[in-house]
Amino acid sequence: MRIAGRMALIQPFHVMALLARARELEAAGRSIIHMEIGEPDFVTPAPVIEAGQAALAAGFTHYTPATGLPALRARIAQFYLERYGVQVDPQRIVITPGASSALHLALAMVVNPGDRVLLSDPGYPCNRNFVYLLNGTPVSLPVAADTAWQPSAAQVETAWQGTTAALLLASPSNPTGTVLDVEQLRAYHTIVSARGGLLIVDEIYHGLVYGGQAATALSVSDDICVINSFSKYFGMTGWRLGWLVAPQALVPALDKLAQNLYLAAPTVSQHAALRAFDADNLAILEQRRERFRQRRDYLLPALRELGFVIPVEPSGAFYLYADCSRFSTDSFAFSQQLLEAAGVAITPGIDFGRHRPERHVRLAYTTSLEHLQEGVRRLREYLL
Ligand SMILES: Cc1ncc(COP(=O)(O)O)c(C=O)c1O
Image (cartoon, rainbow, N blue to C red; front, side, top):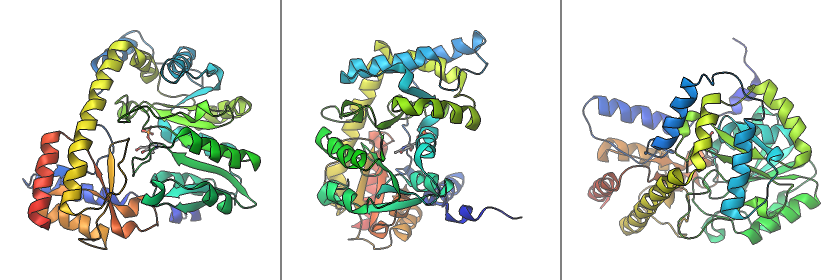
């Protein structure tokens, strides 16, 4: 059957093959330590689950407006004020089915066929594919530990050529966990806005920052697109709910695009999410954040001691991006070996871009401290 040529550009997640093999080994009775999974191991906190159940019982099963429940848009605006001291007009907030749809919407707003979109490499793999779907050209900005895995202003300036539409960054980043400060955000914004482009900042791992709060790009300017989600900090991956804060002028276009692409984000999830910002729920999330911090504080030195090179301390998300070249310069084969021989599942660098993926792997601390300790024990036994 004939399929569109662009489909050849879209890569699956390589880690899925590893995950499938891990499940096979588990079915055959092997114990596997999962350090490849990019979602919190905790279930959604009880207050939100109860609010979801109540929403269902109350019959909230119809579509909401395409931009989302007005009460939820207002609640998110209030959250920006409470947490960051930033005033955001609720009209600028568009509720989406996950950050995934928010990324799709934001890029669809500005990318013409052939337009370039600058992305850090390594970075979140789907971004490149969203650009391909719009027949745009993703442009990798190779980043390394010397700039804390984020592009320098000079790099952005050089890469910004004629038909560039946007710069898309994440803070904290997946896979590296590094955070952008407000000066960096301001510098990017100055460069991008002077060239008539759009700065898009994916803040999905905000909230999961250890030692001080990350700055939101919304504190820099109103004409930046900021993406966030209930998936990670709020522990609601399966509810498929996120949001986009857009420059006011883009909102009517986003509204009509949302109507056409998915009509509305899930209604029950939106009602449940209203409860996510209440003090009792936030207290649970803060305890979880502390658990993630403890895991990072255990895993980072333990991996370094084994010989993985992690030069910059990741201050957010739940990932460590490690140079594994002491053990192998084929990180995909290395990940397969670790799975087969040591029973430890990790993600090879190839899933995050083209800049030295063969030397890197990502380890997620989305499993208990006890599992992480067992994982490190198995790695030590196998590698040393
Ligand atoms: C950086 C980043 N952005 C966006 C997403 C999409 O998340 P969701 O659609 O669940 O909100 C992810 C998921 O792993 C991510 O890591």
